[in-house]
Amino acid sequence: MQLPIEDRRRAGLALAGSLQSLTGRSDTLVLALPRGGVPVAYEIARTLRAPLDLMLIRKLGVPGHAELAMGAIAIGGFRLLNQDVVHSLSIPDVTIEQVEQRERHELERRLRVYRGNKPLPELHDRCLILVDDGVATGATMRVAIASARQQKPRLILVAVPLAPKDIASLLRREADRLVCLATPEPFISIGCWYRDFHQVSDEEVSALLSMSQQDLG
Image (cartoon, rainbow, N blue to C red; front, top):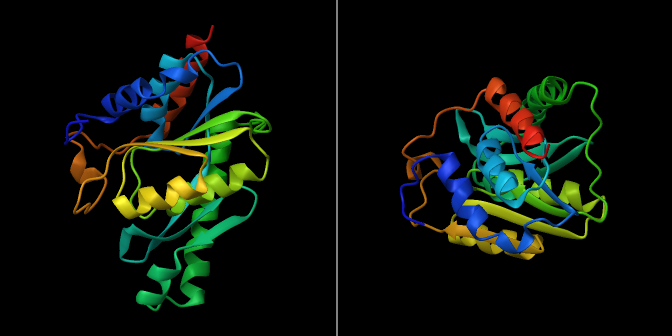
């Protein structure tokens, strides 16, 4: 895949081209990490004719450096800390707890906005495709994998346009399969490899989820 990527839609189309073998499988479920992963995942779901849903995860950003993840959390109480970041920056427990409390409030808000009263998707015995617009530290995707693994899916496939080489290797060990189209070095950040990396809104997420349902008829 040529870098920089035009936008998240192009990233999704490129990933979908590498996932053609899953087209039409009745057990496939595409799970996007909102918000940035949703436009990418929409193109994958549309191409594979698979349902699209959300894997609600929140990054625990380092105070003052929000792009740098010191961990991530998921619905159900899952938490994973990036111990290398925590130790190297000497981040105290009280700071971690404060950030986690704030992000849990946002996680609950998104659950209400995106799902309302709709139950969480059933993951047991499904072929899951976990999608984001890129991976930097891997914290959020690792939490997504661990959270999904609790429901014993048939397969966990991680699909991302790009990631650092070491993080791609880590995800390849923790997921059942990894599709990563580029591992640029030095990585710097996800956004620097996109021409259009606008902040995805709640409205865009909701619209894409609705369109995906209509696509399936």
